[in-house]
Image (cartoon, rainbow, N blue to C red; front, side, top):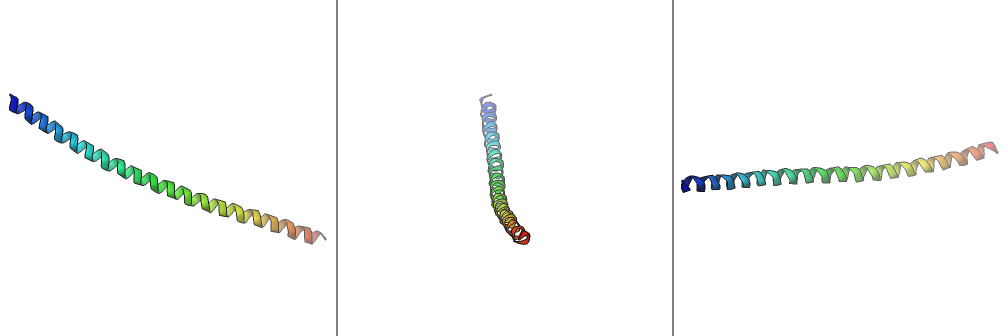
Length: 71
């Protein structure tokens, strides 16, 4: 009887270790994906800031051109 209990305990421990390993691998994979998403978000944010700056400059230049054309 004690042999079966030990075997069960060993099996349970092995299964726990496997589950922990699988969880750790999946969690690390998700962290990597999250890091990639954050980097993509940062890159898109930088591109939007540049695009907005260019748009603002274009609007200012168009205003100046309009004023010159009115004269």
